[in-house]
Length: 527
Image 1 (tube, rainbow, N blue to C red):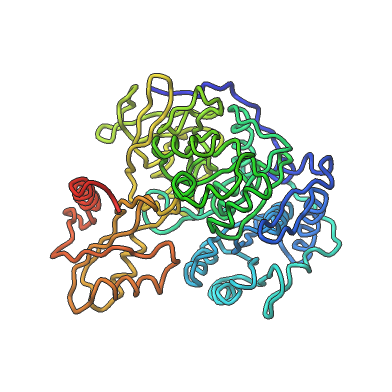
Image 2: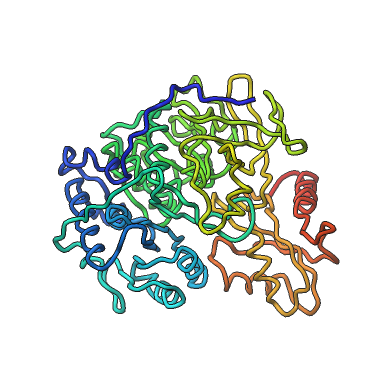
């Protein structure tokens, strides 16, 4: 059975992302577009659009051609918009990297995407240069002052953007990296049409953004959620975005208060702090009207507690990197929000719930894998036709890897994941990546990594390890921590005699996950 959006289809403009985002920029003129929360450094709409045009022109002068890839390896700053949209206006494709990545993790992404240039910030320059040296990157630009890279200000010299012919339905705009359902991170090919469609779809589904709204840019722009829903959509609507380079609860609360933030796109760990941390009472958050949660499941109890404490609307949505990202959203009308649900399909979106056993479509309140079809579905995975074919059916349905059901009113609920990704504070961690690191330790004979429930983070990586030599849990955790980004650290280790595997040798992580859940339930909680 196919479940359609309750919203009427919207017309998707046949234009590029920059043309969409900045079509009203000059009307907004001297209104602040991007403000750096900690310092107050501001870019007005006129400055931002002018800067985007100059960045595009100067990148073209340096040899950036249509389809060339540029990496951005930076925390959230006002300049992120200059870099992102400047690359795109020049006909380039942006690949966004987590600023917590190690040099090796970054080098993998730069090689895989065949990036030509890399844009970073002074604190990350050493890692950026090391990664660039292991890839085909020709030039590294740095936002700010630092030796050993081209100053980003050189891209802000007077220059006109090139005329680039565009086919929005085919031409890529961004290559975020996602592990999809399994394995190492893969480049998700998102076109101009994908992003433009998702903006139009969100606005056609009752999301009432206004130019006088102020948004907090705390979700990382390298992640599709922050990239589309904040960086692109809020600028398109003429809002002011106040950025934070990293999350710090006190600074976050002070920025929310001082800048009178009206709308916040957040993840459950931040909502947990807003609901429960005593320090929240020291700040005036009375301007806050709506919190939208995504990237990881938000319980009904937590949503209710946060809404009550802050006297604002708290609602949940759903999406994936592979869907640009939004596919489901609760209405902004408090009477129509269903806590615990991810909401209804947004405009132009169809969904199916498919049996894990038979592959047949299911009906209301029957649990299965959620499939999605719509203009926001990616073009595919970069250089990986096999993974693309496993994820997108010939009829255009995207297999999400998430298990859920739909109720009588068309609201969807996510209950589990088919896929094996670990969601730590909304960030994806591939178990296979951590297992590969563990297996390089001389004392480890075999290893399996699974998500272990944790109240604060949602899930943390836990390793089951078979030893062939001497090693403590602490040693192994430190060994992995030295080789991966901090959020990927293994936080729990259990030594076992053997790892459960299928006859073909595939790790049966679901067996370990089930054991872990049963143990957590018997102990009366998580974490």
